[in-house]
Image (cartoon, rainbow, N blue to C red; front, side, top):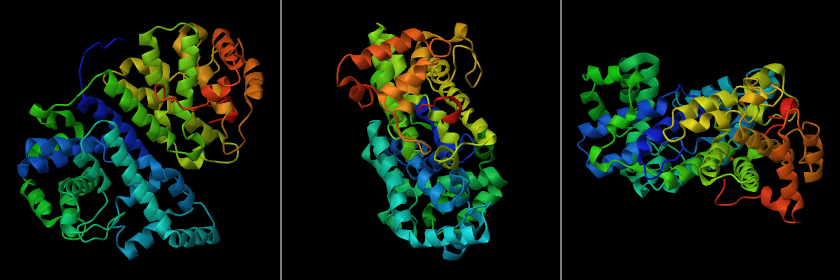
Length: 467
């Protein structure tokens, strides 16, 4: 699809991709969008200026942009599904010692022995500074992504301050009162209000806001929230709301092709940060598939689409627990069934993204095989286009030549030997031959294919044993 000079509303692109951040945090779909609506309604009541509201708007949608940066460590520390840990942490007063301790007791090693659970609790206590550093990494990464997308410094700093509390008991810097940027204070309140409103309605949301007034939340913001309690139409609109309608009309931001590329880069980084075993996987798979497509004479439009599709092909893996992604032993059937669903999640997310809808079929087909033995849909060769076939080959080669928790990286020659047994029945012969040709072209070719090129950026699996 050629966009030419067409300008897409950035709010619709980011709003759609915020669903990927919701699944990473273990939140119900639309959490970020609803938080955005609440924060923008507060801003409207406070009569904040147009420029300030524009900066706030994108901070609210991207508040969880750094969410994947601490997923692996949280899963390892707690011995639990990182999604569950993240989701429940937002529903307790984690800045208080007793509620934080009781929450930890409930969370750690849920199916472990008493001794194993005690060991986990002691590890969490011993790593207090480590967990603070993890919060810092999450906040800093979220701010970096906002800047990557060309958004303003105030937007980035609001995201950096998301978990700071009015009384100084927040994370990671322990900012207090007006040391916390106003937009960050709004983010903190809007996020919490959304969570409790979704679970128990306006009464529950107001109760937690009032209870944490002056501790977590700026008292003036809680007072503003009270003034909105009677806006029944607004609260009723939240479940099916559209955040883009809250973007200031005279500050509309747009996404051209260059910005869509930066967005794909940023979300590829979010995906790859989910697990240390897939670090830069999206980058490398993208480099490989672009090299293959160029070798086979693809035109500029196909190359552009392949680049974005490769970078975003594993966005569905954000919905998989790190207890599965980082497992050092073979997956159970139930675990592998969850892995097999990630292309479906990728498809659902990309179908929502303006300018990327047409990428959903390619990005979600990287585990399909020509003989119909792939997943998630078992598509036959007749339904697998050349871009789909190229991405499948690139995905497999990148996976085999990268380390995984259950095996070391294989050499390029070993990877090709393994793949050759699947050609042409399962992997496309022309695509595989192009890969062989590129790797044989010179001593530097394997390093180039496994490296990072700034103009290309997208994990891979070799069938049942891989993930």
